[in-house]
Length: 271
Image 1 (tube, helix red, strand yellow):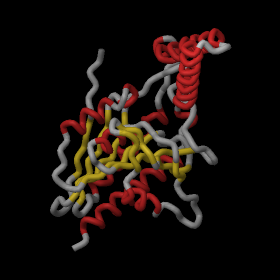
Image 2 (cartoon, helix red, strand yellow; image 1 turned 120 degrees about the vertical axis):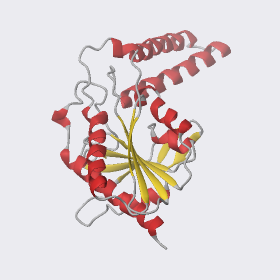
Image 3 (tube, one colour; image 1 turned 30 degrees about the vertical axis):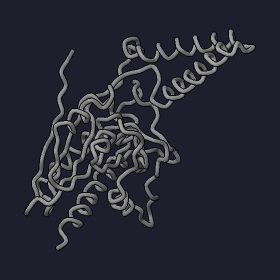
């Protein structure tokens, strides 16, 4: 019942604008019974059981009744998950998903104001409605018509751990798309002798970056991970609070974004 709006800060370069770099995070959060990994497992199992039950019933196979019963139970569990936001009393503070990313952009906006890029216009965006289908970013790209080369870096789960991770694939309305090679190259510069290289996430993500990719704007999603982890956990629940916030990942993400801005700017500043 509350109208949510995207927020943006635009930092102009010191000289002629030759390209744009969009840095984004979503500021909405939500509370659910299961986190996004557990939810995906439940929905996947439900889909398999439904397909099995339908096939068994059509073919009048043995065990059709058992298959239908299991599918019915799975449907009830899935339906409970979908409405669980209205049932769970302890709300999620949303620190890692996605307040940490929002705070990174606030700090970066201040730093860029003091030292703008040479030829890169940096557009910092705080999106609404990501948790209900990336609606904020979808609305933005419908109204955004870039006239210069444009790339986008989206942030998710910043403060969720000390490691950097990046999504190699992204779900979009036009199918699965790959991360932008130029931004991946800039991120690869993070691999130092004393530091582990950013973790490549091989499964498709569903974030605001997908809206950019569907609109033909190259993009990349950056996340923070705990040591040895390959996905973020414990989101959408009361455990997503300041107690689990990792300042090391936050600082590394902020410094990485500054280097990405410099990397992209150098490409378009060359004579």
